[in-house]
Structure formats: C-alpha cells, structure tokens
Length: 423
Ligand SMILES: Cc1cc2nc3c(=O)[nH]c(=O)nc-3n(C[C@H](O)[C@H](O)[C@H](O)COP(=O)(O)OP(=O)(O)OC[C@H]3O[C@@H](n4cnc5c(N)ncnc54)[C@H](O)[C@@H]3O)c2cc1C
Image (cartoon, rainbow, N blue to C red; front, side):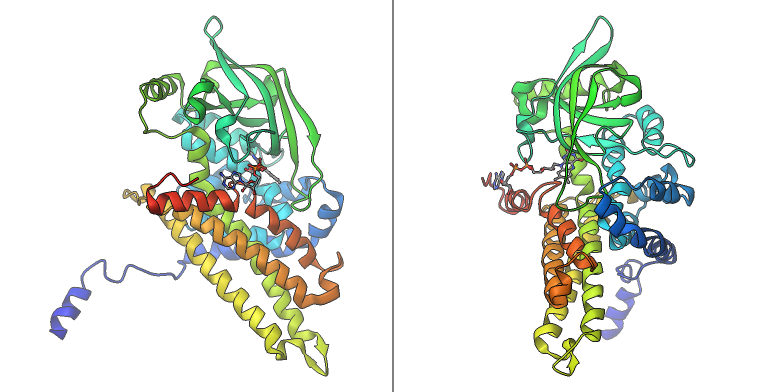
C-alpha cells in the first residue's frame, strides 16, 4: 500500500504546488524593493504634503525600465500571475501616493489589453507610457458624479457619425486618476443607454488629438495625495471610428445580443475590473506591510514603564494579529493572481466564488485595520505627520472605496456563492 502511494506521488503533477517564489520572481521583487526603499520612500512625505504628481520619480522609474511598456507586457503575460502583485506590493510598500502615480496608467493599459484589438494594443499601450525621455501617464474614466458603484446609470454618451466615421462623446467623468494630465484617456460611455451596462463601450481619447476634452477641478484628497485625481468634461469630442476599443463589429454584435435579451456577455469596464482586482489588493497589502513593519520596529524601541512596549501582550498580540491578517490577505491575492493568468498557461481557471473580489476586499480591510493599529502602537507620535503611519492610514482608506467599495465586493461575492441576485 505504502509503495503504491509513493509510486503515485512520483508522477508529474504531485509536487507542482509551491508557494516558493522562483528566481525571476525573487529578483524582480528585490529590484522593485530597492527602488521603493531608495527612491520612493525618501520622497513620500514631500509629495504627500505638496499634493503634486512626482514626475521626477516617474522619470527615474522610466529610466530603469520599471515604468515602461516592456515591463508592463512582461507582467501582463506572466504565466504565474504573481509578477504584478509582487511588484505592486513593493511599490506601495514604498509609498502609496507615489505608487499610484506609477500604477494609475495600468488601469487604462489593462483596459486596452483586455478589450482592444491587436492593432489597438500595439498602437495605444506604448502611448500610455510614453518614452524613457518623456514618460506619459494614462487615465481610465468610468465613474461619474451620479454613477460610481452603479456604472449602469452612466450619462456620458457616445454616438456614431456615419458620415465621417467618427465617434462623438459628450458628458462628465468624476474622480479620474490622471484625468487631464494624461494623453491617452480610456473613456467608458453609453452607446445604447437603455441597455444599461450592456450598451456601454470604451473609447480611446488622446488629449493631444482632440478638441473638447477638458480637465475640471483637481481634487484635494484625504490620502494618495501624490496621485492626480480630477473631474473631466467631454464636449462633443470627436475621435476616429477605429478608436472604439474592440471595434464596431464586435460592439454591434454585443448590442444585438443584448437587444434580443441574451444574458451573456460582459461590459467593458466590468471586464477591466475583473482583471485588476487582485492587483489593487496587492497595493493595499503593500501599505499594510509598511505600517506593520514600522510599528514592529517602533514597539521594540519605545520604552515605557522601564521596558520596550512590545514586552506587553497588549502590543505584541496586535502585531501578531497584523502579521496573520497580512499573510492571509497575501494568500488570497496570490491565489487570484494565479487564477487570472490561467489563460496564459493555456488553461483558464474559472472564478467560482469571485476570488478576485475576495482578495481585494480582504486586503483593503486588512490595510485599514493594520494602519490604524500602527497608529495606536506609535501613540501620540503615530497621530502626527512626523511619522509615516498617519499617512499610511490616510492612504489605506481609499482601498475600501475605489475599484468597487467593500460593500460592492461583498455583493459580488455573495451573488457568486449563492447564485442569487442579492441586493
Ligand atoms: C482617489 C480616487 C481615485 C479614483 N480613480 C478612479 C479612476 O481612475 N477611474 C474611475 O472610473 N473611477 C475612479 N474613482 C471612483 C471610484 O471608483 C468610486 O468612487 C467608487 O466606485 C464608489 O463610487 P461612489 O463614490 O459614487 O460611491 P457610491 O456608489 O455613491 O457609494 C456610496 C456608499 O454606498 C454604498 N453602496 C452603493 N450601492 C450599494 C449597494 N447596492 N449595496 C450596498 N451598499 C451600496 C457604497 O458601498 C458606499 O459605501 C476614484 C475615486 C477616488 C476617491
């Protein structure tokens, strides 16, 4: 019996499960960590206070190839699905505001990657990043003042002008990361409003080529202050027909199906969110780890009642809980990352229980809790801007709000596990 079991276990496949990073993954992690520690961290406080886009750091990242088309393609086509979460965790460990200034472009480039034709991918993704000498950022604009969680109520319209083979876009976008400072804007708009989300499509709108695209107010924020967030106005913006992501034939087919009442298909912004949710979780994880590490060091140094505060279970247990929660969140993020790359391995892994949403939900809530506990461990110092955990706490909060609030993630998960239309 024992011999049979051991023969079975020597077959290929038995030992393939591993949580150990391979050499490439570890080297990448170390490379990004080094950049985060030596370039991002020292500038974090300054950019948070100034609330400006850290162009010199984007340039620095472009120079070493970290902010570039090549590295992005490398992360997107990674068959393990772990490269993007690993890179994101390290960047945001450095600083979340600067991390977002470097990562905001990804939302637009992944929308193009997920929904674009080969020609659109080749033409527009490089333009999202610009060149080493002159890097660019890109923006993905779905949310509107009255359409945040409820993307189906979007009012921005796109109509096709057959005479000129152009799309004409009008409307308003809200909270757009990089909105107005980007050249490439991916704008989601309603083509057939009565079909709600199924009648929407995504369009490439390069600011340098169009008239009528204007940045509105730049928002002053609670956190992520080095990342630019703004309103955007589109007034009869004309773009060539070929700037519709995925092409008109595909859109016409999708709309025809929706009109027939078919329940299949996916809408443009939802497929982008699916692809990126665990990556957003990895960003939150980076903030949580930074706060945990800072608090752990501080607790070993800070002496009260004649002993380091970590000697008290009241403090040590907080750190133990932070560590357990962090590691649990990372496992969910890595699982969803691995699942997201199924197609790259030639064997798609179905998301049966909204595993991407699980990862994002858990990591966001861990980040908010860990940064709050870090402030508690630092006491009065934690509450001041002299110490970084206060900034980390402000930065962490957005993770329970954007890319689907925690409530919306719970809605998605509960629908997936129940098969019911929970409201
Ligand atoms: C810094 C920042 C950057 C952003 N970047 C971008 C970007 O680049 N591109 C982009 O398109 N958008 C972006 N957003 C917008 C973001 O995605 C939205 O703010 C988010 O989706 C929530 O929408 P809302 O703010 O309208 O909240 P609402 O939808 O009004 O929600 C308010 C509250 O009601 C709850 N709620 C709503 N519906 C339900 C329900 N059915 N069940 C239970 N609870 C519910 C929510 O969970 C939340 O707690 C950004 C926002 C911020 C703050």
